[in-house]
Image (cartoon, rainbow, N blue to C red; front, side):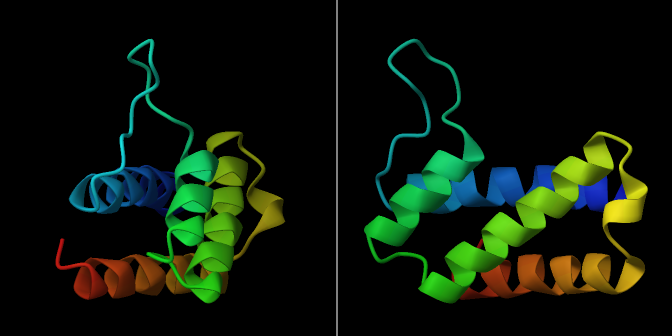
Length: 96
């Protein structure tokens, strides 16, 4: 459960880093961070993320949000393990 919460934060920071590496602003005009779902969509529309990566990000964001809200019956350890592997794949692909 803690792992899923942590991975959600890692996914957010990783997507922000990928956006920055591709000259995509991660802050709104008011200086607040752009939502992860919005950045994910932008990276997909700019062909930086594949459709599969985009979909996986949405899935794992949902799992992370469930964990953050204590909804532990909404996911299982197998999904958290896949979440971790997805993070590793993105880190390797984008040289983060």
